Length: 391
Image 1 (cartoon, rainbow, N blue to C red):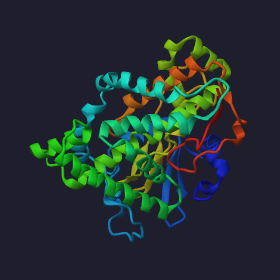
Image 2 (image 1 turned 180 degrees about the vertical axis):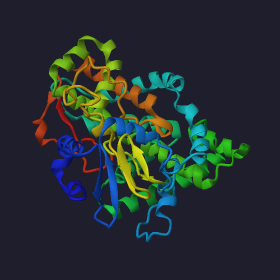
Image 3 (image 1 turned 60 degrees about the vertical axis):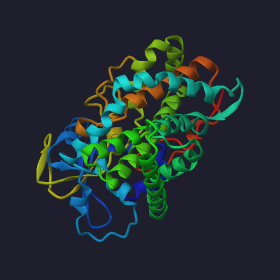
Image 4 (image 1 turned 180 degrees about the horizontal axis):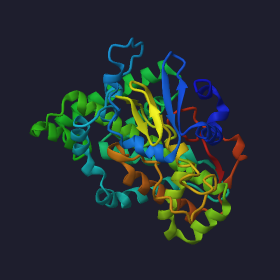
């Protein structure tokens, strides 16, 4: 597994590797290269059950305990809502959940649509553009920055720090980015404490002041988490979706001719090439079974939504993009209490971006062969570094 993470070919196309792993066992013990053994979960039923198993924990502090730690992650990155179990997780999630409900996102749609139109306003037919740099990245970055109250002049560097957190194997780069982002968010939270502006951060500060007992550390970690989770995977999802359509022109033409079907198509696009390839860290608190597979206590568990969404036991002919498929059971957003809080927002951004792109540019095509496209070398996120297209 460790060698795979150093292989650029793996990042170009992970699915044959996932199929091979699943063929051996849907829950497979693998060596970590540091003396530890972990489980890689690639089966759909097994992944779905593991997401909700009470004896699979996300409490990283409890797992690592007194183990030697040579990393220098900012505390707001090392410990967050993503690394907690109930009741702590329940309390933190409840405080931010109202900002990401379906109703709240519906009220944001005009803003997202207007921002998308602004980003596309300088594009002209026949022009070469990079879909990632010119649309897929700035759209969700701007949306989540507006929600959090990040000043426009700061968004470029904040996005760079966020992206650097996913650089597989680059520990010094990740640690430095975490320190920069954590320090920035500490200052931003302090500013919102002095100057309320209606942003989510201001609301969280107010909740603390009204006795909800959010500590300064919790506020900063929530700010970092919302920023990072609010755009990294959505950027990848928009890029992956557009690439899937460009490689399947019949599907692209169908959505162009039937724009009302884009909403349902998003589920199949998310299933087909999921932006979260491997979920965040989990571990077994006891000996347990997932479906028929036995797992030993105190072992890391890596769930792969990307692999699960290509499991032929759940999705017939899973390597084919099929817009008629009922893909609503996909695991691209996870499952259970840790299911992606921002799923409604991400869906809205993907839908609006695809609709605008297909409507405005009927001759859209790849500028380079698909096999030459550069993929991010990130274990968790599956996404393109760039996507050159001709309008």
